[in-house]
Amino acid sequence: MQNNSKRKIILDCDPGHDDAIAILLAAGNPNIELVGITTVAGNAEVEKTTNNALKVCEIAGITDVPVFKGSGQPLIRNRETAPDIHGDSGMDGPVLPEPEKTFEDEHAVDFIIRKLMDSDGEISLVPVGPLTNIAMAMRREPAILPKIQEIVIMGGGTFGNWSPAAEFNIFVDAEAAKVVFDSGVPITMMGLDLTHQALATKEVCARIASIDNRPAAFVSDLLEFFRQTYLDVFGFEHPPVHDVCSVAYCIDPSVVKTKHVRVDVETKGELTYGMTSVDLLGVTGLEPNVNFATELDHTKFWDMVIEALNNLPEQ
Image (cartoon, rainbow, N blue to C red; front, side, top):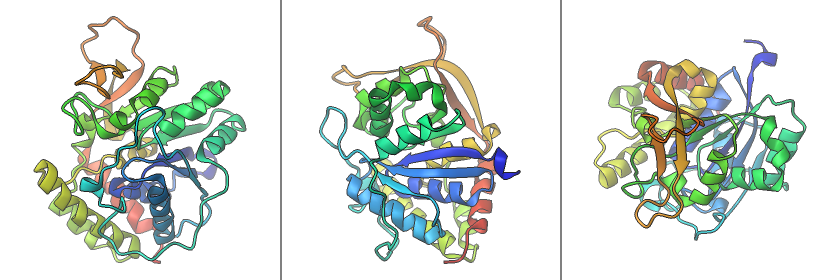
């Protein structure tokens, strides 16, 4: 694929073990142009997620992609993080030196607005953490809305993992999620229904371990830590790499099957705050607003990740 046909994305993330692998997939695939990496508080505080993003860039030899620190607090609620899943650093497991690469002076929200306003509608937003940055950009400059090619979200589902009803990324800032889901921008949603199919099985981990470069060794360390926390917290034998699904879709949409449905975000319920109400049967009669991912091609997905890791330089 020629450079002019690369898909341009801004990856908005909160690294995070699966966020880190999502960055590596984007960097290692020739069909993606990673315009920028923006960070948000989620799996850990924004200072930590930003530092983690910089570390991933150094491991992968990503020297020409700028990193922008974003929102440190949800729009309304108090910040909530996930140390039980990702450790205190947000990316526990691998032992990494402090990065030499630094983040840019410009705030992530300002960067998102600037890049979209300067574009011709060819940039997709790929938020794989809480949607605070995206919502703030939409509210600050509504003129970006028609400039967004697509938003490929990791979040939500028909069930929860942070409450019985809500997935973590949506729960952490449901008000921001509501802004995004109600924006009218084309949205594809990788919810838990889909991402729990993206399991790093023993066979997958063995394939990654066989790759002789530092990025692959880093991923092996990430998955070992992630496997143990998912086993301890959720009883999963194999950890799901949620966020990687959104980047994989941007590379090849056929890696997932989707259904065009109505999705609304609950912000008022005592027991259902952060729930994504997915109208699979069309019972509301409301206009569909989301391409909801339902089925993952597991083989194609992991082949894509393995290929990207092989493409990354030895550091």
